[in-house]
Amino acid sequence: MISGCPTSATAAAKASYGFYLIRSFEKYTVPVTFGIMALMSILAWTRPGVVNWGLASHLHGAAHFSALTGLVTAIGVGWAISWVTWASDYSRFVPSSISSKKVYWYSYAGLFVPTVWLAILGATIASVSQSADPSRMVSSVFGGIVAILVMLLVLHGPIATNILNVYSSALAAVSAGIRLSRQTLGVLAGVVGYVVTLYFVHSPNFADSFDSWMAGLVLWMAPWAGVVLADFYLVRRRQIAVDQLYADPKASIYGDVNWVGITAFVLGLVGGWLFEFGLVGPLQGYISTHFLSGADLSWLVGMVVAAGVYLIGMRGRVRVAGAQELAPAVGQPTA
Image (cartoon, rainbow, N blue to C red; front, side):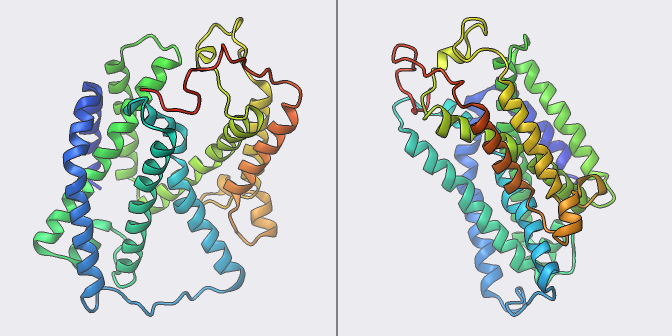
């Protein structure tokens, strides 16, 4: 955890420099991390005493269901959905000749495979280790040179992830009309990330703080995703005039603020909170607490409510873009 501060600073520096440095960094370090993950898996799953394969849950009934939904919300959904807000950024990194299907499936596999792989590996190792500190757990299980390699992998993870976060946040800010250079915005994003990292590092209980953070992300990202998915796939039928998104609001076919979308998002936020059961009081909704024995269905309810309200509110309001307004490669990634 101590490595969080320098890794955040390193990521901010690389992201501020530009995309080609990011691409080169990822290109040469990802194969190495894959090899370390494979070595960890072989050593953990083949040596006796590392994994307790017979470990069974001591929870049953409502308590078991509550624990499962909490894990799904914080890890299964929370981790993955945190990438949704900038998933389209992948289209910036590939030529327009690459099909959207390829961009989608490679991005999906790149997120799904290592996430599930590491989740299974971590859960099996934790079945024997008594330490909640990942670094101590890794050292006790592997030791020696392998532990050093794993620590390098741990250092690489935040850098590789935060590079894209910082770079994309700067581009998003420029797109939103903030009149600062991309490098300046990248540094500002890095400073914010650095401060957040310091908070987590000095938190008395890192696991609880991180879980609350992920639950908070789910609470607002799920209804946001519901509105966006409903709009793109069901309302506009994947027909988006990209140029109109950047046109003056008075002339654009999309107008300025979509208040139906804002309303749907807020109602989805409220609905999700009612079914949420986080680690802190403000993140424990009434329905989850009083009727579901602590089960957390916030992500599902928030997404469905927001999408449903948006679909109802947008009936008869959508102007379909004409052929002359649509981008020449609708549904295709842009360079």
